[in-house]
Length: 116
Image 1 (tube, helix red, strand yellow):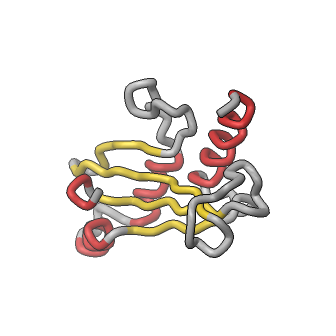
Image 2: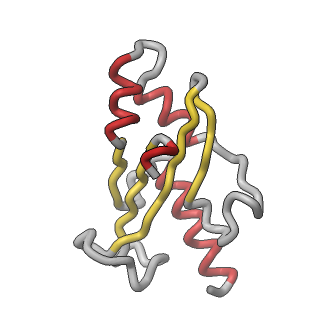
């Protein structure tokens, strides 16, 4: 994939992770994350999303494709993974044009490592 395309996808992923409404998609919490943020007053969905929005610990070890589509962090003592996948408009298949916002829907899945 050419560098300009990767840069575009990376920028779009960063904006989507920051909940920029110009980037279409959905945010999903797995059952483990739903339990984490609903069972403990110290862990709220808003606080967790804030940690994911500001995540910047990217390196060649944890994102080899350079698209800022995966992260791992510790949130209030719990290891959390997040992953962005790029789908077609119907969320059926992978996007054929991942940098085209009119043809791509993103899904940010927030999960516990054992749910990956």
